[in-house]
Length: 157
Length: 392
Image 1 (cartoon, rainbow over the protein chains, first blue to last red):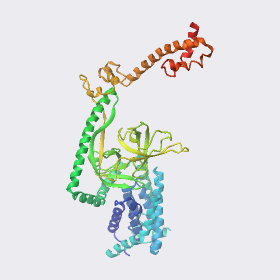
Image 2 (image 1 turned 180 degrees about the horizontal axis):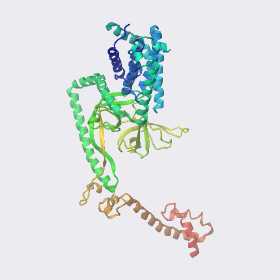
Image 3 (image 1 turned 120 degrees about the vertical axis):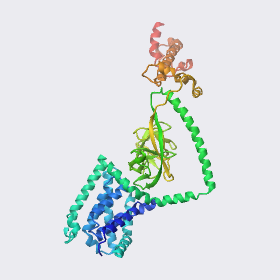
Image 4 (image 1 turned 45 degrees about the vertical axis):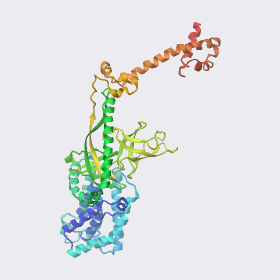
């Protein structure tokens, strides 16, 4: 697979951001995975040269602007997850989809834990278990999301 | 492990050093940004710019619901619109009558306070803002509205709807502002129980239909149905605006604090518009001194001489009208006692003269029959009784 250009990555990241902040009814909102994190994870694993820690950082900053109580919270969490993904991209890429989904679940859990920790540190802890739901749905949706992104990058590149 | 991140021949990674180094760099930047944003509030400018950049996306993302709303609104039937029009006319008439009464009350209140104490601030200017998006998760209760710094919106400005308080602006961008709702778990609003005047704090509970009052002792005088209004403390919300109605009071004998729930009066989920309010401190103008005011004649007659304007002027410049009734009361209380004492001693003196030793237990029965004096009196006549006895 040839690495897609930065423009395509930005486009998919933008679409994922829109999907992430799209208004939904509350019950669906709980279930919604953070699509932007999934997209960033995909590009970190499959195009580690362009989809880099910088992508994770700035995508996280965008999330902060839309839904972060503290600027930099999502940026740190997503930069960490991107770093892990970039470092282990060859191992992750060679795994079958099911195992990839498990790894994504772990990555999303790390991501959410960082957010959770910073929430507590900055004085507004949210201990509702509902905040962890999206890690499961994100992992479940990983195979289709990865397939769509792979189709896009193969079809046009 | 470094071999994983930086295989040979990767210009992008070679440029910025190893992945670990770059991650450390970005993490450090993120931590610094968080610290500045959280502790120092240095980043208002950056927030302002970012909010401006995010606004088009937020508008676009929320356009489908808005378009649906517009379409369904433009196809409403004629009868429904007429019915709504009639309802709004009635509501407007009602409000006009009420505002007339309010002005009379404000004037009367100004007089009673001697025109010195400032009244609670009144709404100076209103600006309607449309809700662009609503965030109601368990973590965050926020609104995005389509008014920003360009319209004069400032941070920590009160936001109301026609039923009650909604929240305050948290971040202001040039064309948009983020409103933190009173139901947000991070938000607390100083309130007063309207019935009793008891002040406390209402904290967002994280769901859209309830506030918690966590700081009330379990013997506090509060019950279901009480109205909570803003207390004016804290300086963000002016005094007297309705906030919520108490729905549940749970008192546990073991817990020192009562568990009280209240339901906000504002309905964010059905509103499409909110009101941004600018307040100014209100100093009512003195009423015309020449002619008597009609409102006062209907009041309690004993209050009327105090309310006549010349009195506060003739009184000392310092104290407002409020001390006057307080000053009037002690004299009223003292004379009452002075005539009471002779009355109590004279009739009580005769039985006491017969049985001087048993004076302490016995006077109690005759006293209620002899005169009205309240029960504080018995201690006072008894010290007086021995001198009276000696005189006899």
